[in-house]
Length: 430
Image (cartoon, rainbow, N blue to C red; front, side):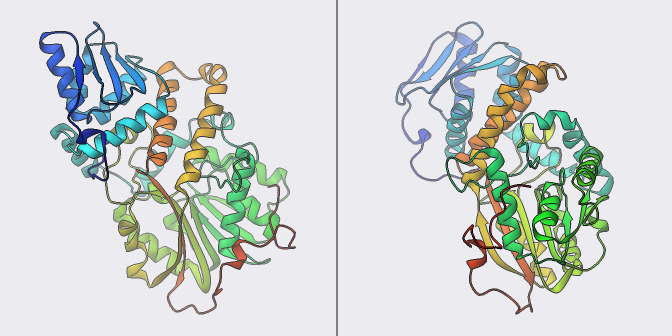
């Protein structure tokens, strides 16, 4: 569950609930308090002893079973955190589509806009202890990305191992095709030419760097602090005989040096920390040649909001999806001009649904290596993220930028939408 402190449009919480609450005494009262905090969503909630709540004013889309009395008070105090904890433990079950149920709760909570005091304290505590220093960033990345390449291979695309938003040019596109579309889309935005130099900050398993080298004949220097990812990327680049064009550097983006024709960062900004944005902009300004182009691809929001406490604790420690206004300190103090912002939110919804489907298909293999709380946590994370993008609570921004004084720029966007038959057009493989 996630808390959003904005209200908009007609909502579940704006009607007088036509509720039915069974049971008596304290449990019934506590259940009513919980429902109030989560904004009267169109779901049925059933406790371990059969005590239940349902709002007859809306069609019930799912049933949530709270199987252990330990969690009821905790859920009232901090639903953002403890729903995930209880689901991981197997003490909450959802009957019905998990993504739809979560999206309904997100919508009702957004309308209700009343985070609990415990949630506010949790957000304040986590913000205070947030650590995106070089050492802190290594620990954060290790906890998420170094849990095993074989795990990610099971449900990411087979072509490029992209753990970021794909680009579905057609509803029929497979995950593999959509990720290749994304790589091509990024390359076109950077207007790459043979012989140019590119620096990549946070390269994942290296798929974008190899794609740029293979199809655009550019020289790429890619930085990453995940040992598992860099090891995989170095093996792949040697296998594909591209190591004369691509160098993978096991180091922090803050140590980038050199002059480059292009700067690209896909899926790293969420891990940088707002306090480091001006310094990141300074690095980009220093690394980018006078007529160079840059691109940042990042999860974001339409307005500033706290990171979900459970995601912060269990999945992405110290991560933060910024709003556009929060991103601006990267550019404004450093004389960098934004040329284009594209929002790929709906593409990320589909990406996450494809990931979740593959994740579920590979559960027998995943369970050989991870325990049930881990399995349930990642299911909740993928379904909850899909619900967040589908509901508009998360966005996906691609921002193209350059030096403020650069006049060597395209005046149209023709380079983005060239026909596939053009000699510089779309490349169909990595």
